[in-house]
Length: 270
Ligand code: NAP
Image 1 (cartoon, rainbow, N blue to C red):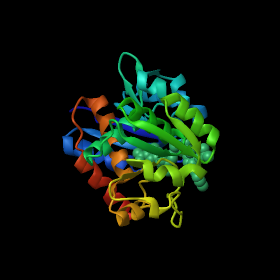
Image 2 (cartoon, helix red, strand yellow):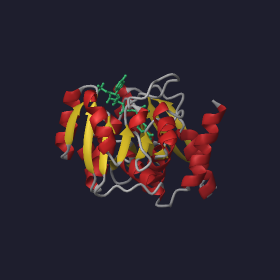
Image 3 (cartoon, protein in one colour):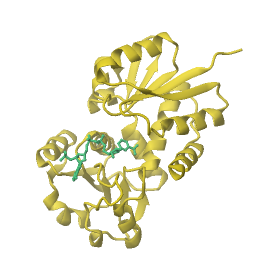
């Protein structure tokens, strides 16, 4: 009998990760003898954990906060992960290879919702890890990217890197109406009662609005719904970054709908 292939997500904290529910649903649907688990690993033991997983014959790993940047030192990153300075997926073969599927996950979520990217005016709020991956990916895909962030220096640094304009939050009111696509890539909206960083009255039906937050429906998306704008939530980015990881590990097309269903069901139960 074939051994069960083990996959996992490493991070700290990791208890609330949705990835085990999502990836186990995918493996089940694909009929693979595989199991995906969450492992509580911090930065000091990341290298050991990766080498240990390789020695045990794991099929692959995902990484989350706070490990994505640190992992660059422990794997051979592909050009995208190297450019983004962060790894969220590891595959084992002749060597330990690192990938970053966050950016492509965001792009696939937008494409599935039929949001135009090429030649679009994209306003990204945030300049952290998620914003960086999305900005890089969408700029590569031909979008004109503007970055707005609480810390304006970080916005300018990221904008300079992807070839766009960067500024502080005070310019949001001027920039929102000009954007084809507005993206919240900050952590604002994760907590019940978090306000939106965008004045909802500025949104309009010709726009698309994407929020990376996946644990709840944010005020930004509620305002976008009210304005008649097209909306995409963070669940879809989560699903497609995970789907891409499965494709890297197995070469099989991942069942995105099954994965989405598993994530939404898990969220409902929490
Ligand atoms: P991060 O690197 O810590 O960046 C956080 C960002 O949020 C920074 O731009 C920060 O601005 C901004 N921010 C935080 N509090 C703020 C506030 N009160 N007002 C205005 N801006 C604020 O975090 P990250 O890794 O990019 O993650 C950001 C969010 O994306 C998290 O909620 C995470 O769960 C989510 N995420 C979702 C997916 C998905 O698949 N859907 C994937 C990755 C991440 P400053 O620079 O000024 O501090």
